[in-house]
Length: 584
Image 1: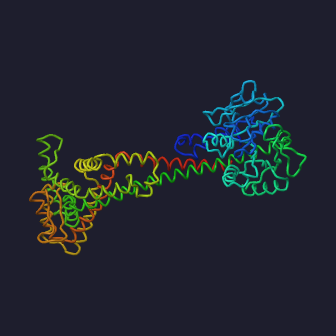
Image 2: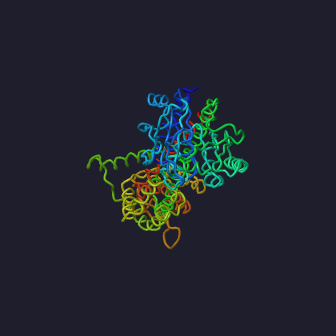
Image 3: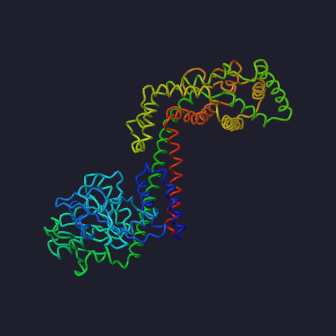
């Protein structure tokens, strides 16, 4: 079981490692794994890490020195003398930790000769402990003093938190001035929430009864019962260093805190509770990391969706300007092929071969590369003209929602790399003009997609119209002409829904294309052509949506897409590992 648990811890660490620099829960989980859970699960971790924490001027260093038996950590009546972690342990325990690095939960630096520290410089690593050895200390205990956890200095708070993350047993020292301080209560509550063992020391008490009442209130406020309540009366000699601070058990005045720590028969149980608390905290941090990844993926998807929705409206406006004529003509021909007899289909097959022969002449004369004809350029020209008129409102809305103004909620929450990419795409000088040029180039160079889908839609419309109208020689003749003549893919059909004159026209398809389109319009009815254009607008509008969004967010779109995919994948992996942690 221990091997399986250690293996799971390593898998969790590997999954979290890519997130070390971008997620605070992931960083905290990695710190917990590397400095606490992995060393604990390595075997041979039989020593007890006892950390002393508390607010400014509570008497932490005085208590540490009293437990060690000599002045080691600097202690001043005004408080704030300790600015990094200071430890004391038996020489044999230090040799063991130096020989077995896997058991270490701190980076240890031995103090030369075990000298007392008068001034402690700032540490580059808040988790580094300056340690002194003393043969009078029990071989199973490492005592650690900490800076004030309510200090205005970040390094002091980080040092305290680095100890709390891995300590087996925490001694929280408070006074009558700080026991009901909300910041103190919330700090202790956050660290003991998962059941990590702790002992409460109420220092500078007025009397025993007051200490008992205040200690009970703090324990209730923290929400986790301590292993013991200790107290010490207010004594100026302790503050000046003339006398050692020796708290007594509120339930048994004959027992001192030193008795509890140095003669601890229940060390195995305490360590088991600390291990269980660390595992519970890890599960919470993994949950928080996975939830943050899910939120990150959701926000990235929301930004992409906002860009897509804005681009779709512009794409629909552009696509509504015209539709290609050839899919509609081919749909008409295909429907007639299915509805007429064998002889008629054979006749049109012969006409189709003639048409193919005509179409092969340019390729034979000019080579395999087929240049775009005047007819094939026409739909592109219409769409690019529509792009110029649709672009200003489209770009204005996109910049307003996803640019620096960040009117979209997901954009306002965007992580720094995503926000920077959006700003590069939307706020750079000339960004709008460059994006429009990219979109126009794509429209002109990218082949039309999903023509087959649109042709099938047109076939349904023609089938329905012929069911209502019936079949006659005019329709047969129109189908024969459609079979014989080449109809350019991009010859554009423009349907006018209002105004005087003709309601439909074919642009760029030549006289034959114009004749066929207008012929079908009169044969099948205006509603069929309008509906065909509506369906084309939907199909082409979605294609143009992708073109516009890609042209507008060339930097941000790939980052957003990767964020959606990678964050969701990592969240899923962490959720699976979290389930395995809960099962072990």
